Length: 321
Image (cartoon, rainbow, N blue to C red; front, side):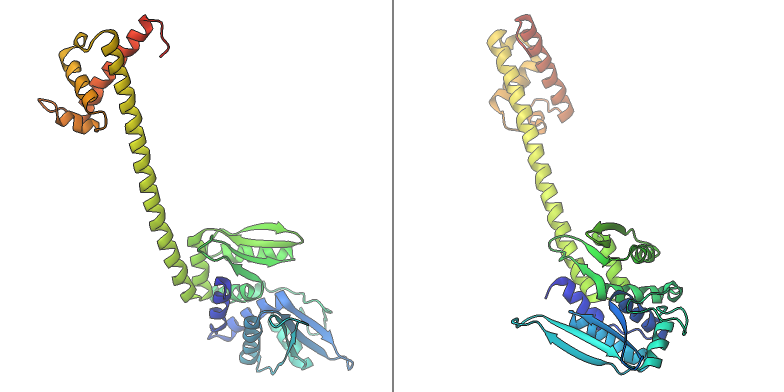
């Protein structure tokens, strides 16, 4: 089971206590994958078709809990494949179908009939934060995915309807989070890519087990990144120290070969000879070995003077620095 599948399986077990929240979640599922048909007697039928068993189960439960609706469930397996099936959940009771469409904001009036595709206004269902969370949960069940956090952080909702995408972006942004919209083929994708915001989304939807699992991954990644940053920083410091020491030895050697170390002032000659004998130790360690001891900044100051003297000698000889 993928991480996204685990999240959906957990959300399938989250049943809102309030009827208005159940209707909001039901409306989200219907708004994504609901259809209306008319039988030979002119009666409305409401149904969804999904390849996700979790969505079918949650939809069936919400219909029963919110409207006491008795739905028919059928399963169609793909020919020649052991795995993969399509689940259809149908409500054939005309009067109840119209009641559900009205209450979920998918039908504007009892006289209107939207045809095969569900239309309508659902924003009226989202005045309460609890209903927003329920609607977000239903939308994710029907059209959402979360990437395995071991690989990357990515939460998305996919819809072919731009207005629906804007509605979901605004709904998520009301908590507040910072979702974005991008086109992918003929679809519009509402996405969030920051781990902390995805944690907040899981919390909003009620996927607390998945939230803890994601947080554990984030902690491990953060510790690993801190260690890597520390190692990289230490490696960079070592490289910087080695390069500086090599330059100091080159300058001192040049002075020794072209003017002699005795030409240096006593304090510079002392530290020059010490650096030649100890090319690998740090500036602080160099200072500790002087008599009297000298601080790191003092050692660095003297070595810079030696470097300036070496550069001056090179200029006199016409050599490039």
